[in-house]
Image (cartoon, rainbow, N blue to C red; front, side):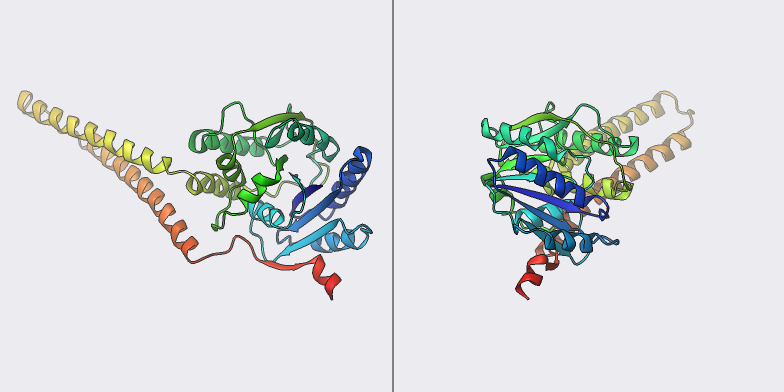
Length: 312
């Protein structure tokens, strides 16, 4: 069985075609049973109503809709879907049609050939420059902070074996980060080349603030390297400050009438003050996340599912 997990946000005009493409593709492949989990991430439009209509028209009971109480983010929506899957293989893809569901056989073949996780790799992404830059930053962060191999390309379109998913859903912290969960579970990850389509309807739900929050979440949830970098940087500047102090004393003795350099001193103070505030903020980010997690802030809250209507 193949389980498809689709986080949905402002996709009332696109999610239906994605589900239909999945159905058509799986019918052509023939050898798999499948299910589709649609997670509405607090969309302000009629996405949930669209999901309900899709499930009502599904005669095979293959589609489950999950409705969040508010917007928790794409990674929380994926985690909610993973908690409900029944398949041997799990495929995650987008709700906008840009990730080609009709090429899912390439990902599934990679799993059947022995990979634990297969990520789609695009020859040319049909995203805006802003979105591509955000993706590049997250790729760099995952490589530096999470130990992702440089040659591995990660995307929102991937397939994973069931044991990987079972390990991922053990994570109960308030800040899930899917790539980090995959990387800490297995290193047997491959790339599969697929096409990336142009967005036909709407625009990306990722603003600059959301991309920045995702970037921060990535390196604070699964790595303490930022703290080590802060310690190393502090040590370097302390040594440089000591050496500069020795230089200043020697200069005063050699050139007693030389001006002390008020502008240079203020520049150094402002720079060091900024570095200290940055490092303090970094430590505060870790402590704050620990505090929120200890208070058991939920990854997501489910308001209802389409199964609730069936039971009623």
